[in-house]
Amino acid sequence: RQRYIPIPGKTCCEAYSNSAGKVDLLIFWERHTPKMQRRHRGTLSVTLALSLAISMVLDNNADEQQGEGRNVWAKSTDRASLLLRLAAARNKLVAGAVGNVMVFAGGTLLDTGKVTDLVDVFIIVRFDINNSANSEVKHISSLRLSQARCFDGGQNAASTYDGKVYMAGGQDASGAQSDVVDVFDANQLVMLPPALRLSQARSFVAAVVAGGPDGLVLFGGGELAEDEKDPARARDSDAIDIWSAKKRVWIAGGGGDSGAPIGPRLSVGRKKLAATVVGTSGRYVMFAGGFLSNNGSEGYRADVDVLDTVTLKMITSSLPPMVPIHQHNLVVGRMRLTGVTAAATGCAVFAGGEVNTSQNDAS
Image 1 (cartoon, one colour):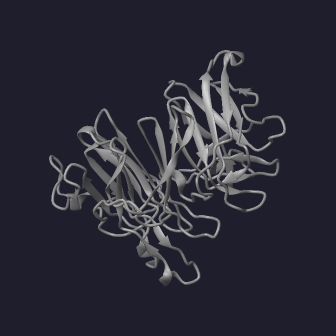
Image 2 (cartoon, one colour):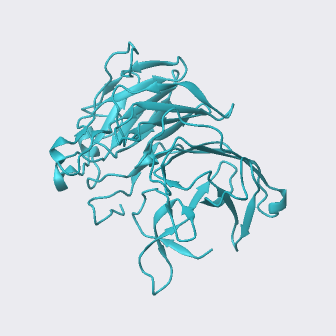
């Protein structure tokens, strides 16, 4: 219940507990008091399609809330605050939203340090900003991922299309990369079986929806292997897997016996990148930034790769009516950035990110 102000550029979304056992979803905020100018935990503000700004705080005091539980509201001068509880305190989870349905999945449990398959679904049935007594939120905590795993860098690991949230990759209980793509159906409020499989098991993948007549969902880049003690053993992926949500088949890439051809490739294999779409019906997919392992300070990439989802080819010369594609690199190489598109103008925006382990970029 204290006032916080954001530190520019701190966009990484992870959950950590404080001494009271609360779990806050943004770690890179700073307490607004002169004596405590340090990194501190704050709240995650979520703007819903209801055109209402809701400040959410998720905590793990589950003694009073099981299943749907009860709603707790806190008043502030400018908005109502909705306080909800996760089924268990955890970090490195992935999240997505469809209309008034929000899903939080996987992560690492804070009490045991183990990865989990827990899925929390919150459904905003009614929200009255003037009278909280008229509001209603349901909580479903019985769903599970097909594989327990965490999603460090999960801000880009999920994407939504046609009422479904696609949650890709991650790391399993052994620390190995995962090839699983779990799909949550917000219309039926279920996890759809069977889970999809990527062409390569990887974490830190960028998921994005291009839509179009085939309803394309793309999964680009990611980390194939991690070894902090011996960085030379770390490997990253340049693969782009493409799933048709309309046809329910892999158009390119895909694991198992998908039968699909090998998908297009990024110019440089990398992890912790961002993706968004531009053009009519999301024809062009842009993969930006990221980190190339075993390259030290040179690993922070400024590359922007553009895929034409009609031809399924990477654009290397120009993107009409834009300037030559080689001029589209980011101002500075960085990882853990986020990309969005302003639909009304068709402008892609890549914001924030980390330029090294001790300094974050506020571009």
